[in-house]
Structure formats: C-alpha cells, structure tokens
Image (tube, rainbow, N blue to C red):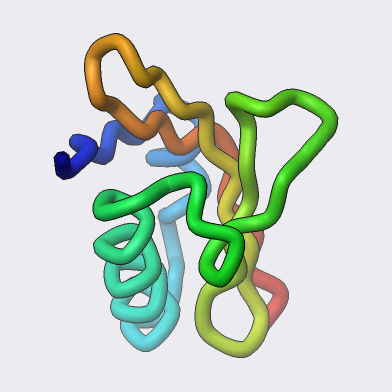
Length: 82
C-alpha cells in the first residue's frame, strides 16, 4: 500500500525560500516514506508511535503524522539548516 503525502499549512509555509536541491531531497525522502512510513531504515520513531521523523539531504529533517486508517502521511514540520 502507498500512503498519500499531505502537507499541513505550517509545512507549506516552511517551504518558502527552500533551495531547489533541498526540495528535491525532500521529495525523494517523502517518496520513500509513502511506501512504508514505519521503515526504521528511513524514519525515526518518537515518543508517539504515529509521529515519526526522517532526515533529507545533508541538513534537513521532516516530522510527519501517520494516519493509518486513511493511508495518509501528514507532514507537520520541515527543518532545513543548510
């Protein structure tokens, strides 16, 4: 099953001014996440089993909420420190 990626308003607002290489890295990572958002080789667990994080590129982290019942991964926070 493939999860649909959904960006929260906060995440959308954080993308303003992102360099193109960071956007490409984020897109590649979220493509992997959509295939298996619980994959421990791609994502990191948090205290809440439905919230996970993944790094992207050399300087980015994305936090997302997994909504299993509707097969959606909702991106809630994006950090780019590049």
